[in-house]
Length: 268
Image 1 (cartoon, rainbow, N blue to C red):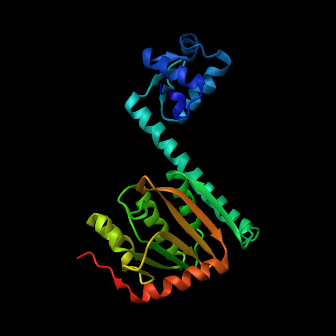
Image 2 (image 1 turned 180 degrees about the vertical axis):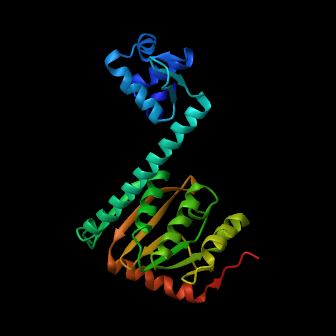
């Protein structure tokens, strides 16, 4: 159940504010009794409530009396303060990430012949997106048959966003699609790619019948190969990732003539 502490109040501050709502105006002594806030702490608590804009005091009265600010206004102020706190934390985290990227990049080895594999839809998506986010030079994407990479769901949207980020980093992106895939795609999926990627000068998508399977080549040294579920072809069963320059070059030699013969894809 939500509480005032979720919005940043201490236990004593929450007790004091609720007590003021029930019995305003109150002196500090009266509030201490009604809220169970110790007398030695109640003045500091009231000062904090005033600072947060949750209480007001009548300084002319002796002893000083306090009233609660209406809940709607009080909660809005707490929410605004929490949002500002979160914005500041976000800026701090972003700054930390920028600093760490510079420190950590130099220590990441590029080991030839390394490979890994994952099983499952979410795991396959996570691995593919992780590897696409390392691309800085060239991404080649091939999808010969139905695949969630180009579907309209969340997976397809995330792949689109990852390819967009690669373009922003200066990479070229080439996408080669088979006719079996295009026939199964709703036009909205193609429109999404056209809207979000096709306008970029370093992005191109073509189609040809001379393609099967689904894979990605990244920066000429890495290949992500999708293994479809044999019982549900539109669902990924596993994803293989290989860092092998020679293997990637062999795949590229097979890709290049098919790319040259392929036709530009239009959504009209």
